[in-house]
Amino acid sequence: MRWKQLFTPTASLEPDEAKFFIAAHAEGSYTLLDVRQPNEYEKEHLPGAILIPLPDLADSFSRLDPSKPILIY
Image (cartoon, rainbow, N blue to C red):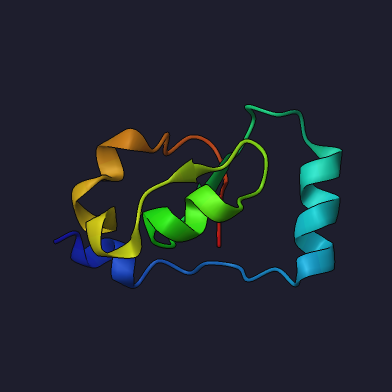
C-alpha cells in the first residue's frame, strides 16, 4: 500500500465545479475515473470516464497518469 497517498491533501469538488472543470479543460488533459462497479458503469457513465472499481484501485495505480489531475466519482 502507498501510505503517503493516504495523507496527501486532495480537493473535493461540488458537481457544478466538476462540470466547470471538465468544460474548461481539454479532453485528455485530465483523467475522469469511475470507481463504481462494472454493472453500474455499463448502465451509465460520464463520457471519457475510465473504470477502475474501488476494490481494484490500490492495484491499478499504474494505469493512472500522475501528471494529470484525476477527477474521481
